[in-house]
Image 1 (spheres, rainbow, N blue to C red):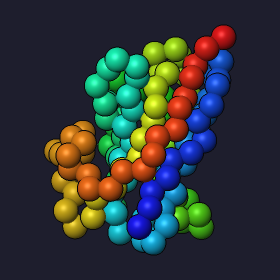
Image 2: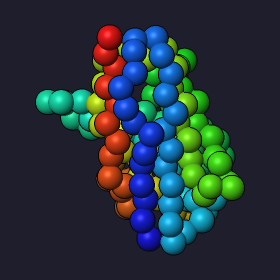
Image 3: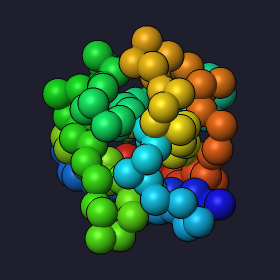
Image 4: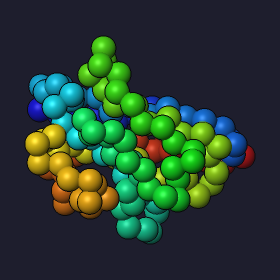
Length: 125
């Protein structure tokens, strides 16, 4: 089983970016998938999680992001808009069995048992 985040890159302030979290060896429909990010010198920060019950978003970013599934690609997509330099970070996706997921634990990295390699997002003019 593998998880891979991709789609990062350089984007100008105010721009948009779509990150994908793709799985191999499992069907993501059965899992809750979370996105986290880690900026240089900072702790890993929760961004959003998608479960069978719906999507959950961190308060500081929820007006600018949308999370949804692409079942054809067995992926979960993080659409980010109105990006600013403080969004610069390595973005990671992670998953946990849907039966074990609890919304109150969504923001805790230890709640997830499989992580993909991150993808770097740089917001700069």
